[in-house]
Every structure is written in C-alpha cells, then in structure tokens.
Image (cartoon, rainbow, N blue to C red; front, side, top):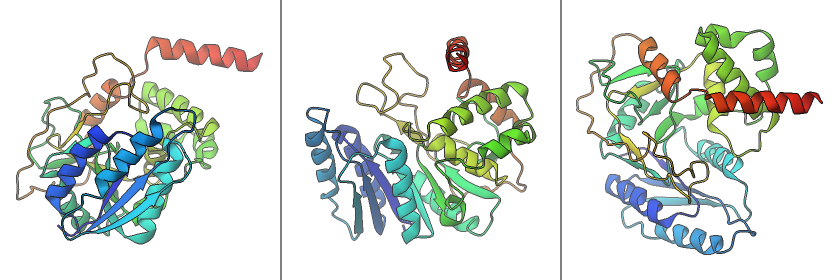
Length: 304
C-alpha cells in the first residue's frame, strides 16, 4: 500500500480500536491522525480522549505517523474539515476513515486503484466505500457513478477538496438562480436539499461538514464513485455518537460488508446512475412529516 490514510478520532476507544486494527492490517506508509479535544463541561471525556489517542501509539509497522491534535474542542464540523484541510495541505490524495467506520480489507486497494485511475480527471471528486442500495445490484461493473458522495470511509484528492467551503458562501447565488433544479431534477429532492443547505448556511458551526462537501461537489458538477458492494460498516450509533444517539433501530447500523473482487471492472462510460440515486434520495435523504412541521414552526417563529 502506498496511499496515506487520514484517521479521524475523538473519544471512543472501543470503536477506534477496531478501525485502527483494520488500518494496521493495511499498513499505510503515512498515517495522519486528526483528533478533537474534550469538552470541559463533560465529566470523564478528557480521559476517554486520552485513551483514544493512546491507541495511535500502537503503530508497529513501517509508518510515518503525523498528528494534528487540538488543544481545545472545535466541534465535529470545524475539527473534521480543518483536519482534512491539513491533510491535503501535506499530500495530493488520501483515504479517510472516521473512528466508527470499519472497512473491509479490500476497501484500501479499491480506493488506491481508483485514486490512481481518476487522479487527473476532475469529473470525479470522491471514492466512497459505502453502498446503501440494500442488495439492489445497480451495475455489472465494480462500481457506478453517483451525484452523492457518501463519507463513511472514502478517498479524494487535493484538487477536489480545494472547492470545500464550510460557510457555503456560494449558496445564496445557487439558490437564487435555481441551480439545484438542474442538478436534481425532482422537486421533492430540490425542496429537501434547499431546506438543508439553507439551514447549514445559517448555522455553519452546527457540527456539520459533509453537507458542505456535497454542495462543493455539486457546484463543480463532480461525480462520486460508489462500489457495487458495501465495504464499510458504521459501528458508531448509540449514546457515544456525536450525531446518531437515537436508540431506534436503523438499517444503516452495522451494515454487512462484502469483499470487492479484483481485478476491478471499470465502467465504459461516466454517467450517474439515476435509479441508484433516486433510491438513495428516497431512503437515505427523505424528509419526514415531523421535520416538515418543525420547519414550518421555525419559519412562523422567525417571522414573528
């Protein structure tokens, strides 16, 4: 393996250890470690952060470990985005894993081969390890192209990440000129993403970064690569999670992973898979009635 890996950690040693072991088996030559600091008002969190960082000291292969540990708590949005900024200021490309995203061993060679193949092709912005099609086979090739860029285990290049802007300064113009209609071509999807982007634009420090990344890819007309099989299992749902603390059973919890077959079979064309994207929009990115009611109440309160 030749590609650097960026590892984002915080305060969960039990999940971090499992992802670290997968990285250890892959033996990347460089390991960039991004860590946030504990929140002073959370008792015991400093000890958890310390225990999590201690796992990184177990690197026992020929590897340059480069650390970016924050002394103060930046929050998920700023810590992750600033950390990825730092990674791409040092290298041209990287594989990125968070502390709860356990990869299949074939995830690494899958990303590495495609990072090389599309290195200079600006039409592609990201390579995902996640597949949320729940058994629907969308292609006979090893992967397909999508307008979505799932970030539970992914890879990208400096040339793509340079367009990331956590403040989404171009959103007002994109919104005013109706460009989401050209990207999504479905009024329900346009409404969903318009509301979401507006919310992120108004509250850029709310611990979000991946929606800004989606926005950056869309306004560059970039595509994401999605593997035909799921290569990432998210084990981080629960009370220790930053965003997914609900006890409700989710189909995205502990999704099974399946080996990618090599040699890879590359698609002979570069067009987003509409059927797969429509399925993703209707399942992963769906707006519930409760969310609609909350938004309406928020608008009423704001108007008054």
